[in-house]
Length: 412
Image (cartoon, rainbow, N blue to C red; front, side, top):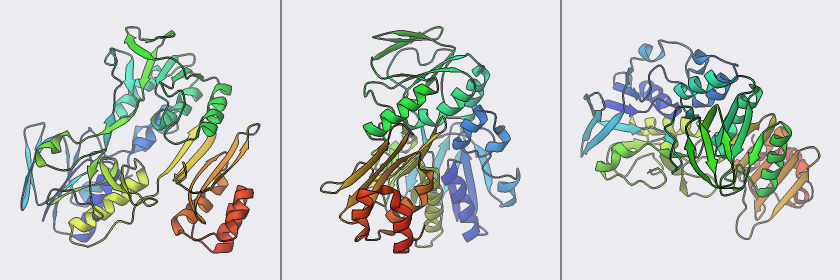
């Protein structure tokens, strides 16, 4: 069997390893779109703050890991996939072609640049790749003027490194006027904004960005901001252009079934590029989470190797360190129609807990400043354990989460 995997992130690497475990004699080719060994994007903030070097970002410690498994490792970008009834072929940007019997698309996503002039100017970068990290690190000296355009999860991941470097950071939230809008209620967002401002971050929640000028300078309809570095963190989009001629169904990502199969024979997808099953809703969404990508890769590889394994779905869960203030979101944190929710807010101590219920099931939660509740919340949601009388108690006091978990004997 001839397996080809496009993308060497968490999903692609785990898939390659799983294929080898289940088929010692198969031909396995792993294609990375970036030079160097497979690395973790989640390590980039730690490179920026000097906690690790680039070598520390590698996903596997041994430099001979893939070679030792007999996995062919290439660098290149997929230009087009030619799909057939029994397999197909991948065209790479160096002019080479890879034949496959089974293909896994694990190409992840790329930054979505804002539709304004000047995003290609010197001093304007994204915060996504090792090359981006090198450019940012070169500018991160005490007093450096850094403007971050965008205030979502990608921006949130990078903020701590920028602030701890001594840079003067301005964050432009955009038209929504709310930071971390995709993972936080307005109550939580305001608390995080207040925390960031207390740490010296200038959070800009009004005004429209018009353009970037040489300097670089960010020009808004309300002000202009001179900078040494402008970081674009305005979202991401799936890397799927090479699939267009295959007829694969693509929405917010590549549509897959519960065996990670796309709508095209012998092509599978996994990780940030795949629109997989949501554990909480049963719907098909993109969960850009490293644990989800790793599990996607494992399940996809098993099915590619002929082992029939269905994917039960991933729990949406985000963890963010906002310059020392930890926040978590789980599942259906916005709540469900007809469901109950409760909130506990301690503004003075930057503590916030929100629990959302569907009947007497816990289905979603947000915590700020409460890392000790993480295991209890995840256990109660994923076990789908009926809370019974505990629901009323949690509605009154969300601090009793661990007591409920222990009493109900839920797995963590």
